[in-house]
Image 1 (cartoon, each protein chain N blue to C red):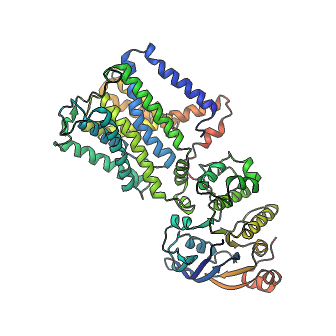
Image 2: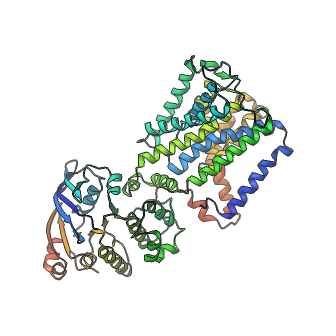
Image 3: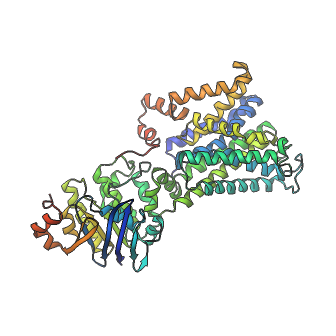
Length: 235
Length: 340
């Protein structure tokens, strides 16, 4: 059962700088992507949902407030974050990363299934978290989140810095996750990933959701892409 | 659960066999005052190494926590001078003393739960000095400056604890068990969480762990370890005084842990052995009043040559001699976070 995330009028300020000025979005049974240029507040929104930066407004998971909880509680409530830049633990091996979170692990995601989904991780199970390639780190970061079997997983730019062939594998994995009914909020700069995984895409501009459009519509509308994102299509 | 590779087990077995056979060819003086002493002080250093290496918490309160157990067992010990209000047989007094140290460890962890690095150092130092001064000024329970004497320890198989063999083997068995306990714990999920906290507590919280509770539990476990050391040190010294838990004792345990090497639990015992050797033989080398000069110089030389102590030196030597175990040596010493 997908976790329903509701963000209402979320504000985040760092000193005098306002990063988020009234973000509202909602992830229901269907996964949602948020796209936007650098510095628009996407990562700050992820941090705010995880309780890692002070924020005002309202955030609820399945109707229950999470804004007032600390990071550990939020994670135990069932929100898992795959952070931008992967953030491995250098001291722990691949297998230890998985053991760490698998203590609460129950189906659908188990360590065995992680190794089946990402055979590369099985080969690298004894390597340290800082001895992996970017793609391997990303697989491990995603596995770490999935093993928590959360109600909702937030992925912050999982395709960043990955080779195109790895991005294809990533898209398949994200599609599987979404199809199995785990809630998914996907933050992306890569439009191809966003539009392949989710039907709806929200566009974030200077700390607000400027528009929410259908993936097909966004994928085909060059003018809209230029206006909001100033990027060319995918790779 | 695999806590060591087969080769490590083999090496550990050989090491243990050597230590077990020491009484066959060592005079009692060496058995008790060098090796026995290194073992019991090494246990306290082990608790520090455990916290520092796996959790990233350098605590100066470990000697104080050992002192809590030492004073606790002394207060309850039969035949102690002065005799406490409540005396219990050693079979009860020892577990209670270790329990007291465990609780004291948890309390220190609770007080220091949100501090790191220099602030953690200062808080634990303040607690250590405070406790030692309190013991020194309190007559009712701690008997002030004189401390509590004649804490001889239990009889084991009908032999007094002071028998060199009894003392040495008890110290060896307790030290070996605690050493294996540390190796075991760091492979459990709890130990993995500790290492994750050392890398980044934010990240560890973000995957759903209560960082504060794990830190407190780590300090409690370190307290349990230090408590055994404190009890055995009290039997070794046949009593306990405030100076044995004062600033110099605190610094001494830190020096043992650092010169032995904070990178591995065994470093604590290596450091304690070097410390015991120098403390004993300083007088014949440069005069006993120059002990601090000697230990200071040895400390400087070892730390300059090898920041991760004698253990790290051994690791590098082994690597240089062509063993292909580089992964283990470098992999276990990543103390700081890699920039990315």
